[in-house]
Image 1 (cartoon, rainbow, N blue to C red):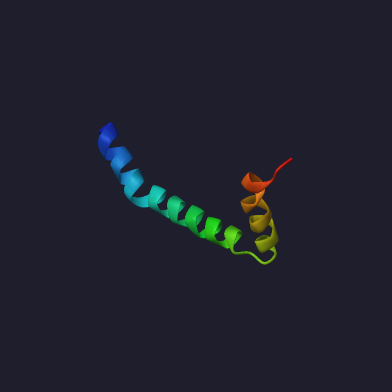
Image 2 (image 1 turned 30 degrees about the vertical axis):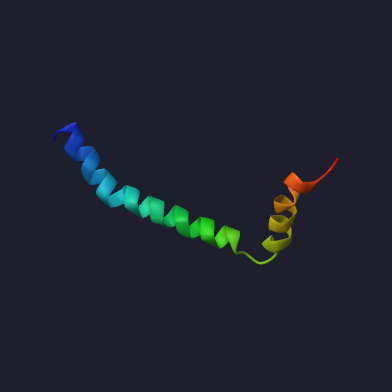
Length: 50
């Protein structure tokens, strides 16, 4: 099997699954309970005058 063909088959199957799982995990991490305060604190960092 050619390298290109093998990489293409891998990207079409397992890599798509891996990216989907990563995306769902990132969304769950961002919208988990209790993360609002951390996100608001991070959003205020550029406005702090230390």
